[in-house]
Length: 334
Image 1 (tube, helix red, strand yellow):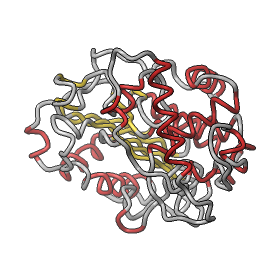
Image 2 (spheres, helix red, strand yellow):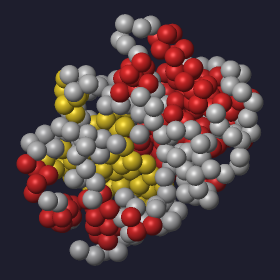
Image 3 (spheres, helix red, strand yellow):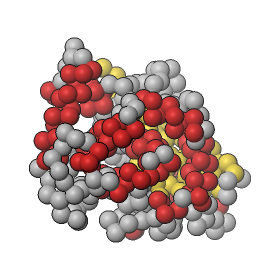
Image 4 (tube, helix red, strand yellow):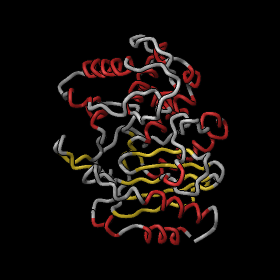
């Protein structure tokens, strides 16, 4: 059965993908709580950088499971070094704070600086950007790594714990696999880029340049994991969804609490996942989607950014793969 689906997926992929000898793709599926499909294509690596999926796996999990009350608090009430504002923490998770998507913080840092010096510089940037904002209730969605870096400061201030401690706690609380972590090695980890800025191959090292220069556990990116790790996360997510559905409901802006929802016909989840579905993407070519109506969880791990971060050829296959999997398991169609 799995072999038949694997053939269908392979047939949908352009042979051009595999001319890159380092291209690696893993797919895992949970259906009604059972692991029903795992497949690999291209070079066989075990671990992948999950990139922005970190936002959902780490930060959203902490907020939903440990500090849900923080969502309605004003950001400036939690962090005293910000100007007073009506902007609430929830808007950082739904990318509606108005903060910019990205700032090249790494360009003003160097590896000789201490952790404290880097932290001070980051806070100065966050303070300046936050204090520019108007406190209007609604703004356009701006997908913002800067918002998540501020969210990391919020969580540290509110919990009085460093992010590294919060990560250890949520891993234990939710029984995440030990191998799902910010630290990894080059061995059996898919490379993500030949980086001109770092002048080396990026393998077993965080892809995002801000995260690299800031070091340590970051709230917006940097987790590594295997397809088995993602299926374990899927098990946790589906059980958590049943207990705490209100946090996973789509809001007017199109986001749940730190989770994406399908964006119509152009969704990376394809055309068949329900409107209740939640998920997240990772820039390096990773994703997960969970459809609670059909109890279907799909994770895709790849290194589509290798050797060049501008390589987008794999992106068009994400919805195709999800549609094939949905038809196969939910609709029993080949």
